[in-house]
Length: 306
Ligand SMILES: [Zn+2]
Ligand SMILES: [Zn+2]
View 1: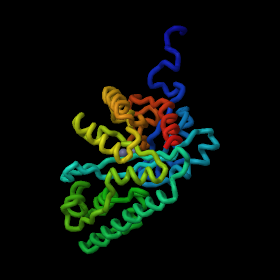
View 2 (view 1 turned 90 degrees about the vertical axis):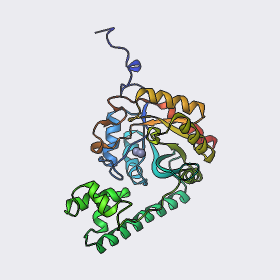
View 3 (view 1 turned 45 degrees about the horizontal axis):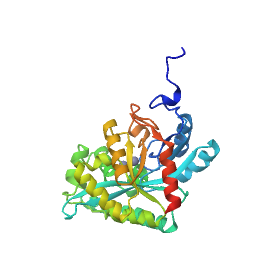
View 4 (view 1 turned 180 degrees about the horizontal axis):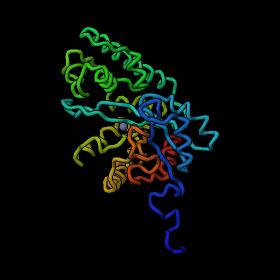
């Protein structure tokens, strides 16, 4: 029926629009449900022009996906998502901030990889100590049980699940309250990096640091601008303007903010597969996402200049 449908390129959120990409996704190497190979297949079926794999704390998913992407002719971008702590300027309050890092050259520096291994070792150390502390309280959990569930992210949520399954705790909340939460006697702290330090390390590692899903900062407009300016001084390069959790008015706000602060706009669905069943690769939540290829061009141009 000629004249009824707008041309494909003008249809918003159409997965067949040209220059359609996704710069935020997870595989089963962190907390996603698709293997790297399956994710590449889905990206190809969705007709994405480019995909960044941004697993938490690991490049394994990207590395495993690379040969499949090459075979499929998919432009695969190397990325990672890091958990950082953002302190208020008086250092009294802290927030958890997710930092994305893109390595458009394909590989981080050996120093960055060594730093990442140190982070993973710190996570393992904490988990080992937590296993030990729980054992003293008569709880039988092994490190391998926790690591088989959590992969690169093995941590307290996985302990909680096992505590419930084994009948030590009634619920997830109960497990945190009595065993692994900050006020529980068997709590073991994990050293975490500040957002500013993580930004510097990404920079030194030839990566491009980007604040992920800024909606989760839960800051007032003024505070948000102050924080982003502060992080920009530390070397922040980009802001994730499009994300499944950003409603259209916030996408417009972040796009404008990125422009005003001269931060690279980026975007992605934060696809996790079955772990977040309503979020689709490339199109986000109910089609609320359409990330233009120009964003990736911006990242690549930035990398050449810096
Ligand atoms: Zn995140
Ligand atoms: Zn993510």
